[in-house]
Length: 223
Image (cartoon, rainbow, N blue to C red; front, top):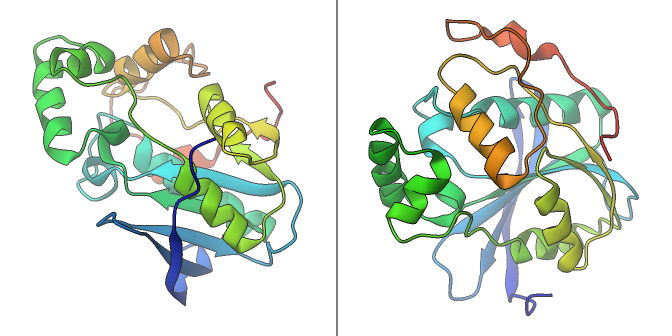
């Protein structure tokens, strides 16, 4: 387990969104210049098996609507699931590009244009495959009083990382959005080289998917 960070619950408010209202709590880690968010629906204090998504920042996908990844769609799906169930939390961690930062992520994208996959692009830059850490996620869950979580993820190693930080992950549920022609290679690299669990055999649309295409949800336990 990573040494517990010095964490401050800095500010919070009720935020109306297109998926309903969420309590948004900002956290600071001592000595670190970025802030992280807990996006909370309903009462989670003392909660068991609370529906949870630990989501890493993706400016290119979430702000610029890049079609190279599925990050924006996964964030939207998580918020929609919280709204539908009435209770849960999304932890929004500021660790762009699997922890390499925005500038190096753009460098990696340039290498991908030359034929590198997402893993080899990082390695060509002398960077790790995945530099993300989850100590802040654990600290935020403890501050919120969450006792255990049902984790929305396709990445089994994220389950292991959270458990290593002392979080009781009682169940993993798939967090799938339909692939399309421009992100399928990215998803295939994550499945083949990083152990992510995807179903990519369905026909791939040639155009950008519409919002309604993301309504295929599965809450089946894949473990």
